[in-house]
Amino acid sequence: MKAMVLTWEYPPYINGGLGQHVKELLPAMRTLDTELELHIVAPCFDQSPPVVAVDGPAVHWVVVAKPRPNHFYDDVEHANRALAATAVRVAEEWGPFDVLHVHDWLASWAAFAVQDLHDTPLVATIHATERGRYRGHLHGHLSEAIDSAERELCRRADHIITCSSAMQAEVEHYFGVEPAHVTVIPNGIDGSYFDVLRETDLSAFRARYALPHEQIVFNVGRLVYEKGADLLVEAIPLVLQETPHTRFVIAGQGPLWQTLQHRVADLRIGSHVTLTGFLSDEDRDKLYVAADCCVFPSRYEPFGIVALESMAAGTPVVVTDVGGLGTVVQHEKTGLTAYSENVDSLAEAINKTLGDPAESGRLADNALHQVRECFAWQVIAGMTLRVYKQATDAKSLA
Image 1 (cartoon, rainbow, N blue to C red):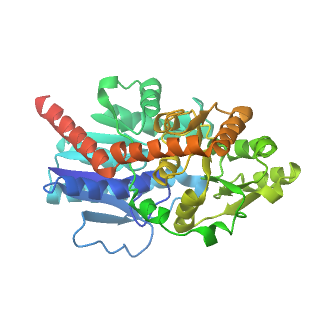
Image 2: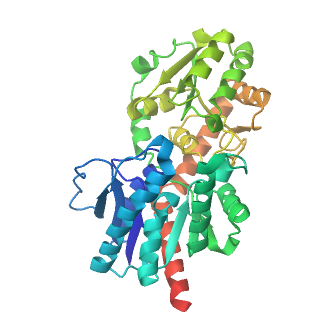
Image 3: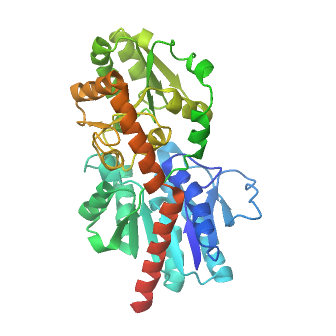
């Protein structure tokens, strides 16, 4: 099979879960199907495109300007003209392709250009929706434009992949997509690096954040409203009433950083809270393992890769039961879930996790087993390849 993948993020240009997903998925697919010929069309935000590994997939870089925050949609749309020109050239030189795979709306116009050229089946992975992010509402012209682009992508796609049943419900409800045209394929994870970390002495590293007798509660993510770090801060006094020897490490950058800092001061909990700001991937992974509990109180979460990473690290996890988090973490089986935007419920789940290490360890062991059985990249790759075949078979019968 010959496939073209169009994506706005590809290593080394990774800004979030989309880029990480593409980075891990494509090598796993090539390992699983040695006859799969992959061509990737992606933007390069430097004048000199990165060097591509000889034994890797064919990457066709397109040099574009990085979108300006105040002109994001227009700049992405403009960049897609260059992406489309390259994609069409690749299709004419290397095609026709059996299937196109585009990740989110950001490279959708380029995908449409190739789709129109050879009537190639189009698979679209929808990682999130603008309406879902704002709970069914749109905020301003940018939101409306993104929503319109997402709607058009769903209309033109022959098949859609979502990362959770919650995301499936979003595309069906917001864009009128028929259930038969949607397949849920979760994000995956390579837990091997956590296996190594669990066998490593992290006591010196841990001492940077907590005393030996203190427990660590860890949260990492963009400091934005939908991730809910402010809810964790509000829950801290309630947790400290029952488990006073606890340190809270909140890692990440974003517009809420200063607000969180001020709220920590107002609540007089500064001696128990560390706002790290930017955290390297290496230190993040060490904290996943060193922590006694990882907490993710999101208001909106299409999937929840951070919860999956915590589970792969073998650390007990507490999440809010929203979006994909409620699918990844099964209450009282692989972790604990709290009610969304309910500080009391969140504090109760954290206290329960910290207060019963034996039960929390049992849940963490269950979670680690589930990660290895259900979320390995080889499993995800196999499911994706089946969608490719389903899309091509449907097109040949049309």
